[in-house]
Image 1 (cartoon, rainbow, N blue to C red):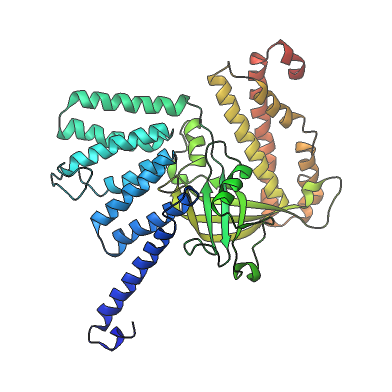
Image 2 (cartoon, rainbow, N blue to C red; image 1 turned 45 degrees about the vertical axis):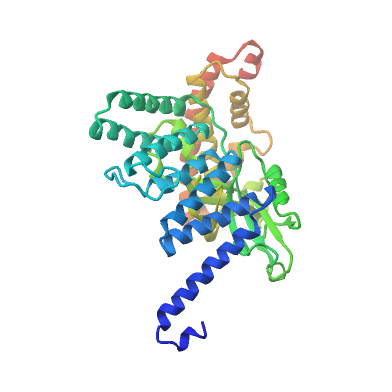
Length: 439
C-alpha cells in the first residue's frame, strides 16, 4: 500500500492490493479449517465467504461455481438437504431458460444453459422433498411446467411435473413435520476465528434438537470455549480476552407477513411460523414494583430483544449473522394479551388437527383444554381479570395500557367461543376412560 501510494496508478493499485488482501484473508480462513470433522460448520462459513468474494468482488464465475459445489457437498455429507437445495439454487438462478449457450460448468461441460437449469431444478426438488420443505419446491415446479408446456410442448413431462406438484401439495397438507428450534449464539474473545469473533448469529437447530444437545454439538466444534451461563451482554473483559467464550439462548422466530397469505390453510401458516424467517425474539422476565404476592401477573414485565439476521432461514447455511438488534419493554397487560393470543392459536390449531384426523391420540387435546379451563398453576384468566380488568387498573392505566386492557377483554370473550368449540369436538372424540375428565 505504501509503495502504490507514491506511484502514478495509485487508485487502481490500492484497489488491487485491497482486493488481494481480502482474498488472502478468506483463503487463510478456509485453509485453517479444511481438515477435521469438528471444523465442518467453520468450513461451510469459510466456503460461503469465498463464493461471495468470487461472485460480488471480482466476478469469477468458474471459481464461484467451484465453491458452490464444495458447499453443496458439505451439506449433503451433513444431511442438510434443504440447505443443499438452496445452495444449488444460487447457481440455477444465474442461468436463463432462453439461452442455449454452453458454459463454464465442469459438472455439465457440453450442456446448453436451459438444460443445466432444468437438471439443477430437478436435483433441488429432490432435496426439498427429502428435507420436507415442499413449499420451496412449488415455485420451481411452476417454472418447469411453463417450460414443458410453452417452450418444449412436451406433454408427458408436463404431466409428470404436475403430478409432482400435486404430491408436494398433498405432503404440505398431510405430512407431520417437526418445528425446528432457533438459537442465538454469540462468539466472544480473541481466540475465536475472525469470521465469527465478537459477532452474534441465529442458528437453526436439527430435527427435534433442544438447547442441551445443540450446546453439546457447538462445544464439540469449539473444544476450548467457555459457555457463558448468563444471558446478559458480556462485558469488555470477555470481549477482549484471549480465550473463546460462547453465549447460547433460545429465540422465537417471527413469521414474515409477505411469506404467507392470511387465508392460507393452518398447515401452511404453521410452516411459515418457523421457516422463511429472519426476525427472532428473545424474552427476559422482569418483576417491577409494586409486587403483589397473590398475583404475580401485575408486576410481570418482559424485556424483549428483537434480532434481525442478514439472510432468511433456511438458506445456504443453517445460521445467519445478526445485523440489527433492538430492546423494548412489554407491559404486564400487553404480555397477558400475547399469552391469550398464543393459547387461542394453539387451541384453534388442535381443533383443526383433530377435526381433520379424529383418530389421533386425544391426550394432547385433553391436556390443552384442561390447562385453559382449569389453570391451577397460576390462576389463569381470573388472575388477569383481577389484575387488568378492574376499575382500579383502568383509573391508573396509561393510554397504552388502557388500549391493551380493552384488547384483553375482547380476547377473553373470543377465547370462550374457541373453548366452547373445543369442548364440543372433545365430547364427540372422548373415549370412555376420558369421559370423567371431559365432564
